[in-house]
Amino acid sequence: MPDDKYSLTSELTDYIHGVSYEAIPADVIARAKEAVIDGIGVTLSGYSADCTTLIRKYIGGLGFDGKCTVMGQRNGLPAEYAALANGVGSHALDFDDTQISLLPDRVYGLLTHPTTPVLSAAIPVAEEVGASGRDLLAAFCCGVEVACKVAEAIRPYHYQNGFHSTGTIGIFGAAAAAAKLYGMDKEGIRHALGIAASKSAGIRVAFGTMTKPYHAGAAAQGGIVAAQLARMGYKTDPEALDGPWGFFQVAGSGVDSEAIHGKLGNPYAFVDPGVSIKPYPCGSLSHPSMDALLDLILEHDIQSQDVAAVRLGTTSNVLAALRYPEPQNELEAKFSIPFCLGILVLERRGGIEQFTDETVLRPDVREMMSRVTPYLHEGLEALGFQRIRSLVEVTLRDGTVLSQEASSSRGTPERPMTREELAAKFQDCSQWLLPGAAQKKVLESIYGLDGLDSVSQLTSLLKG
Image (cartoon, rainbow, N blue to C red; front, side, top):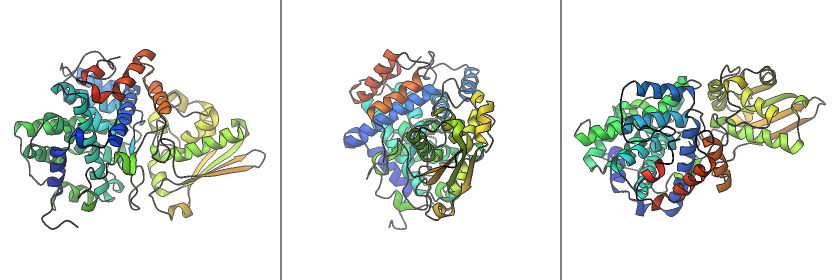
């Protein structure tokens, strides 16, 4: 147990200042490269989403010009605005990775989307300062570690009371990565974290709307702004995360400091408990159920016309987040059990091409959704939230009932994607902006990122 004089702000500051590429284990670097591949892929996939297009239009009206890459377009922007545009694009389809927690009172797989705010901030700052691939990897690993440990430490009240931790906590990871790339001293890092604490924002009422992706982009932008201000000498309370008026108490009604004390980089969250790469572009709480249903469909060659009903028994945290029984657009569909399961029955796929407004409103899709019934499963509820548990039951028109329990999905640490599966997802995400040869070059560049003298060698391939 830390003593009464222990400061979370100080421990985070010391870690950010001291971490180096050489000190990060090889398996963490390997996992970080996979996250970069996935992060860049989902950013490209969200380029044409309405929320991303509007953000770029907003930024364009400000008249800024810069050298930092907005993935998918030719003209550059200042770092903070490139981070905003890329962060919104990365979260636009809800296809970005998720942090895993194994604590029984936390919600498994629902702490943060760690890569999006951190990578969206780290890449433009790396371009701004002329950083190497190793510099980017070190800053990215540092930022993800900070965000994940802060998310693990804050009391469950934070998320359960309605905060969206990708926005509220992602900003700390973004600030850490930016501060690392700027080479800031301890005092500057401390104040960057403090400024980030005051800029932290995001509430869950925005789920199923354009504002949810904005949380991620704003966290990336805010982290850079916090680091830039602190770098200039801007001051705040030096213990802004601690005490009765600090971030943890105000936003979380407390903190489990043991989740941070002595745990930063020991082990890295990237490898223990791990980070999940999404197999579907929708809320992660639906993924185990979707995989279980798809397994049943393929194993028994179930045809849509043969399905009388689908029932999903699951826990209250899943039902609360996946809250749209009759979605009216693709954003709501990402948080809709009837759509996520119904579309698999109809098309045996739940990819980018299925999550569109047109698909959601199709008569056959509406009819199939009416056959899907979610309900609270008391037995699974009693087991707690440290897993995403569900029971999928398919009733066929001949009376046959097929069922399968689920507690994990593809892309989780238990069932990690192969290199080929990750490449296939990247290709699916980037196909509208990058030709096949360019996709291959991007993948090669990321796997060889620690050998690049300049991050611009990678970002030059991402302009669309």
